[in-house]
Image 1 (cartoon, rainbow, N blue to C red):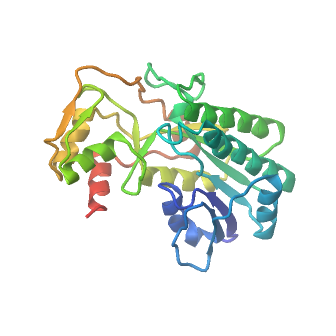
Image 2 (tube, helix red, strand yellow; image 1 turned 90 degrees about the vertical axis):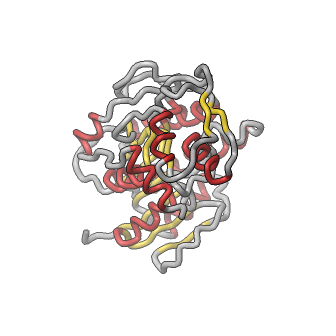
Length: 302
């Protein structure tokens, strides 16, 4: 790649942002990371910004100062389990901050790719499998509502202001850096800490997961994609594991005898949605099966 660019990555210390920084250092001229948590990356091509960006002017100044040409927006409140007692914090971080970024990009007119990390939570319940990006948003929680809101607004920026935006609707992400709760984390930690847990569903309950390395490879592919593309893409792993299957895979490395299942399912269904659009347009597909992802996940813990 001859013309290396300056890339802004929000959430640069998080589950997705931190490995993205490492992955893109050799494919960029400069990476600016924005995250209240310090990223300890020691490289003269990386600069970390921990000071909050409170308005469009703050973001515009940053984009101009560092001559940013690409933005990966992976920051914000990262799941429905966080900050529920402070809904204003979820809205501020997920909606307002996204609007500061895209409005500054519109004003600057020099951003040639804006990647938005949306979420399967924007859809809400996915009772049918193999649904496409046309599936209607019906979020079940405030987090999902903020993702759906940003997704819809950014689509209008894409259509009305000729901004090059790609929204990636990501399934539940798992990986060894994840600090917030998810059921794969809970299963692994129950074995490590020898704690008993009862999962709120039956063993045959299935869930669409994606390993963090697949997320990073997809974002990288989209960031440098040079052909025409659509606005929105569903992104998930290659398989649709039951939780019994997940427990079995974890048990190959960690004792899962303390993991028990409930007699009924107390969370909404989310079937695996279609990945045909991203495969066709972007020539990307996931590589980490649940077996491969869990093996790599646990291998990084030891």
